[in-house]
Length: 245
Image 1 (cartoon, helix red, strand yellow):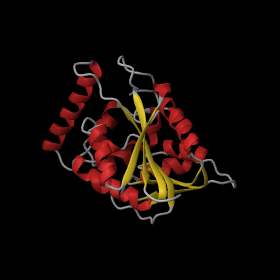
Image 2: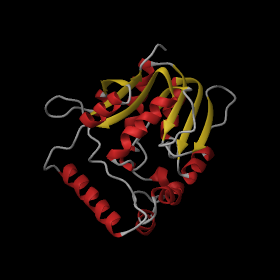
Image 3: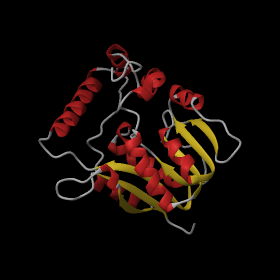
Image 4: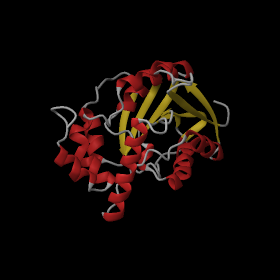
C-alpha cells in the first residue's frame, strides 16, 4: 500500500492486530514508505522555527520512530541528540540510516517507554512528531511530567499541532471513522492498539502542559497555510520549563 516499497494491506492488518510495540516492530522496515512518517513539508517549517529559538545544546526526539525528528534536532543542537522509542524495530531502522560522523552533535538511540524516561534533567530541547495519538488522554499528564523532568531549567518541549478539521468535512469524517474503527477493534481484540487522534485538542493540551509546570507559547507555521478564517492550519507548541537557561 501507499508505495511499491510500502506495506501490503495484509501486513498492515497483521500489525493492527498486534500491540503498539509489536505492531511498529513489524512495520519498521517499511515505515518510511508510508504516510505515517512525518513528511518533510512539516519537518522543514518546524526546523525553521526552532532555529529562530535556538541553538540548543542537547535534544531528545520523543517516540522517535525511525528518526524523522532526529533530522530536525541535528540542525538545531550543538552537542548531542537522542532518540527514544518503545519499538526496537523502529530504533534499528533509525540506527541503520544514521549518517556516522565525528562532528557534533553525537547521536544515540534508546529503547524506553516515554511514560518512564530513563534520563535526568539533561536536555535543552524535546521534540515529538505524530506520537500523541498513542497515549490515552488520562496518560498525557504523566507523559508531560516525564518530559518536564528530563529538561533543564529553561528547556523547551516543542511539537506541531494541526487545527481541527471543519465539522462535516471529508477530513473530519475520515478521522471520526478511523477513531470509531479503532474503538471497535480494541473492544473485540487484545492486546489494544492505541491510536486515537481526535482527542488531542489544543485547549486541553495547553492546560495540561501548564499544570505540568510549563509556560506555553504558540508559533504559527505559515508554510503550512491558513484556514478560511485566516488562522494558521498548523502551529508549533513551545512549552518552556520554568527557570533560567
